[in-house]
Image (tube, rainbow, N blue to C red):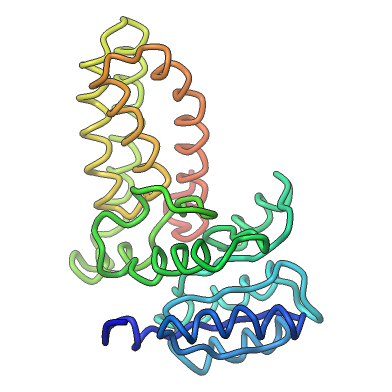
Length: 259
């Protein structure tokens, strides 16, 4: 385990003592520093007091559940409120996922995940700040987050808060335009043209931390390069859903973007 891995600190919030002990042992043996709490209110207090690289929370917990705890954590000042948060649950239906996403939870991890998949997922998320390809490669048990807040925070530091609204709005408008061009190329049975548009979208999505968006256009680009027209057509509905969800998340985080 590298020195960098040993510096990563994880907050584990789980009401079940046995589950908490097991997950904490696995993470500690892998070199992570782990703080444990047994309920949502304690998770919020811990997040306010310490800078974590990742928070793992059971969906159902005593007192505050993961959804309400995440809402409160997201209201904490930078950097405490910007930590990646995963919720652990046996099953997560569409309604649960919508509630979690709206609260600011970044992804889901099955409680049935084995040791290796747990560590793979944790590595995927704690390296978010350093890996420009974060969210692009599929990882067991997790889906890419809608946005990488750390990327957006760095962007605001780079361009200044006064320029950020115009830049983000331009990103959204250009993305809509290019998605339309991509759809037109698919309709015209032009897979290489579709791949070109997807490639352009992938670059801008990565720049603005739109990780789920980047993932889907990466898949579209691969399908286009392979001439897989049926695959391109099959991915378009998912692309549209991701575009809508990404805009909604950015508008929630940055109210100046809302129409």
